[in-house]
Length: 267
Length: 258
Image (cartoon, rainbow over all chains, first blue to last red; front, side):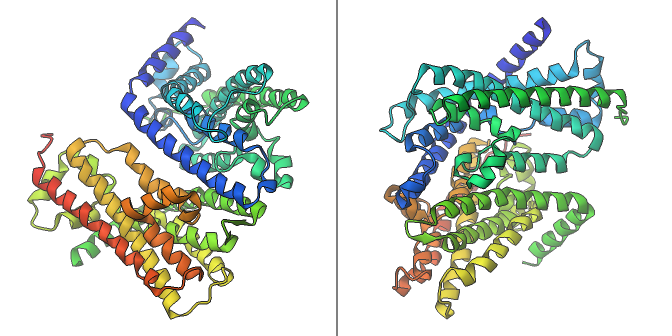
């Protein structure tokens, strides 16, 4: 455990070095958030009764999404990992007395966390002072706040375990272009990054909400604003936990098989 | 022009050596903007209209921006990777050749995989043009063509602007993507729906509205004045300051020495 922790620290500090990139990121995220809010405001004015959630809940959703983009962007891949699989430098990793799955998992989480830490604070602080209902507000109940934290952690681990599966699949396919593309685009839509999931038609939503992608950022952000509450809360968090375990088991099993038959192609 | 055509065929031949990879990245491009399309589809299925614009009218807007952005990206992509040219000192090579600078940089890179997006834009046009309720006559057709030309030139000018800024910063400026990617992303709806402030910025600072919003209003008949037809051509004036900055940058250029 200790070695993974120190590896985590190393990666985390490494990620914190890119401060000017983070500044650029914050500016972009602000613009994006503003435009999203203006866009949804126009739709709200078009037909308030068709709006599936409170406007303030939506604002929270948008700003949380922008602040924690780095944690939940399913289309972000670590080029290094793909490259090590492709060009065979993975053998160096295999020589180490560490579990490769745990190592990469730690690494994925560390990078995402370090990016998010740099970016989230300015966004959350500034938007808290925006006029209602366009800014961030506090969660309605302490229960919601607590569940939000739990759900955030589960969501982040779920994204990382999803990434892991795709990394491991590229052991078998060698070229990673195709699988990456499909995974990125599909998950981006299904996790609610394009439009929040409640805006989908009910028929679609009834299926999509049970998919693993809905457990990524959709769950914590809607818990925060109180859009998911009561008994639904337990079900959503349970579902997150369920998918996390499923993904971890699949990932570990695939990794086990992949490493048994791995052939390093020279290099 | 002959030289540019030569560059063009070379790039095309290179791409065709890796057909599978080209095919895959084309599909990738298609999927990326297909997500955006799905977003528009589901939003308007729920709300039916936004600020009085219907679904197919929004699609008309979306496809105009998508088509002009992907055309600009396909042919003017060279400017986007310009920071690498400067960092590696390859720009010095370009400077000593007795040909136009811009031509050589444009020829240095072309992105044919953007065809994936173009196909999508054209398919959407195919749906939106008959259903948008526009009474098509010669002036309307010209307006649409002007809109696309204006869009390509505006995006190309933005790419040129980024490249010019690289002279001063050496690194490429990430946040400048706000304008290009942002315009592509949020140009899916008529700019007017974002409110007056955004509309003003997009009229006077970066002329997105000149090719996307005002001629679009003329197109769907909300405004009758034919002057709106040629506004997209006015947006081409944006090229001028960008070009001047480029000239200034070239004159001031000091090699990175690598």
